[in-house]
Every structure is written in C-alpha cells, then in structure tokens.
Image (cartoon, rainbow, N blue to C red):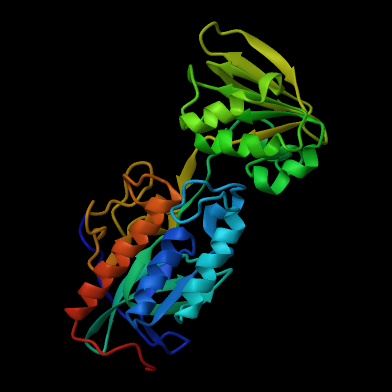
Length: 334
C-alpha cells in the first residue's frame, strides 16, 4: 500500500510537538512509553477510555513474567501506568483518535493524531489501539447487553451469585473468566462451536476440578438470546445434528475473541481483511514510515500481555533509531 499523500500542516492547538505519539494505553502502549521516556523522548499517549486496555477486565493474570503469584489485571495496569508516568509520559484519557495522517510544516515531516477538533503532533507514532470484544451478532444480544449479556467476568461476575450462567467460548479468556465467575455463580455451562476446549492445559485442569458445577456443549452455537427485561434463556443449535433447543439461564458471558479497533485507520496504514495492521514481523514498522504497530492490533501478534509488552519495547526502540535519522530538533514548543 502506498504511503498516503502528506498534507501541509498548521500548528496544533496545543502548540507542542512530541517526539513520539502513542495511540492506546494498553500493555503495549504503556510499555512503549516506558522505553521512549527513558530515552528522553517527549512522549504522549492518547487513550480512548482509561489506561490499561483489555488487561483491566482480567481477574487473574498468571503468565506475566515477574509475578510468581497471580496478579489482578487492574493492579498490573496501574503499575504500568505509574511506571510510565514516573519517567515523564503524558497521558490523555477519554481521547478517541478519529484520524491519523502525515503532514509537513516548516519543511519537516510529522505524524498527527486527530481527537475531535484537536490535533496532536509527533515526529514518530506508535499504534497500540488494541481490540474490542467480538459479538455473537445473535438476536437479543444487543438489546440485553447490560441486562444479562456481558463481555467482562471481572466486572459483572458478582451480580450472578448462586445463578446459572452460560459462557460462550472455549479459549484461554473463556476459561480464565469462567473460573472467576464460579466464585459467585452456582453453575456454568459452556457453549463451544468446536469439539474441544482450546485453552492452556492448566486452565482446562482447573476447570475440571470444579466437578459437576461445570457442563459443556461442544459443537453448539447460540442462535438467539431470549428475555423480556433480562436474559431468561438462550437458543442452542447442535451444529452437527441441526437440532435446536431452548436452554434456561440467568446470564450470558461472551468470550469469542477480539475485533481490532482500526476503523479510523482505513486508508491511513495498510490493514488486513480482518482489520489488523500489517507490519514488519521484526521491526514492527507499518506501511507508513515513522509509524509502528504494537500489541494485539498487529497482524500476527500472539495476543498475550507479555508479547504485547515486548511489541511495545521493540516499537519504542525502532522509533528511537528512526528519530536519530531525522533532521529535527528534540520536542519543543512551536
């Protein structure tokens, strides 16, 4: 994909040029900021919601290096945020980027991120926007979201004390979140399209220890979520036999993967058909010089907290080397 045409730029309202602008304050973005600020590069993070990203919704992180005991996702996110701030990272929360583009001003090239009517300018940019929960697209799902349909066990499990809950999905997140939900729910029923769990064996073993509190329907899918004011049941289809049945439950938790948050990047950088950012597998540079991709949003990423952190580090180091080659002064007031 050819690099988008660079447009003449004017001074952003803030009047400041950063060395690195990072879009997204998840594990990848925060890790990148820790490294860029330690290199004395002026760094700004723009975050759509609040710092932490998807790790905020994980009740128990057991596979992040350096934590011999499980750590709550919120705690891990807070530690990363405080570490990034300690080295001088500026973080703007509730700043949804609607557009990024390359511009020229004063004969120099910059990358700009647009947030409503404000523009933030940097000499380099790291895209670490992450992903959002994939939906079932089943009738009743949208209408009952927040009324029995949830995508976050950490957030909503306490509402299901002594209840019967359906969990859709069979990967790591589905099992990890399910184990947390079982701290409150009476019974869990998994609905899985495939013929087996796809999670790590240690999670499968932990789930089996729950005994008859857990059942699983393999080769099934949810075709509809039923209920008037709240979830009352789901319609299940046996994908092998074609049989349909109603299954009563008190809530539905959906953990079937993620969709990249790259709608605003169409035409700006090269994307896959699924919307993930194409980037060099080693250097993480996108189709646009001076822009790197890090974390779950990168095509081919392992989608783990530890590898997201590694992506952030690599992107930061690549940005540092890139800036060395640019004939530009350090971040300064314009």
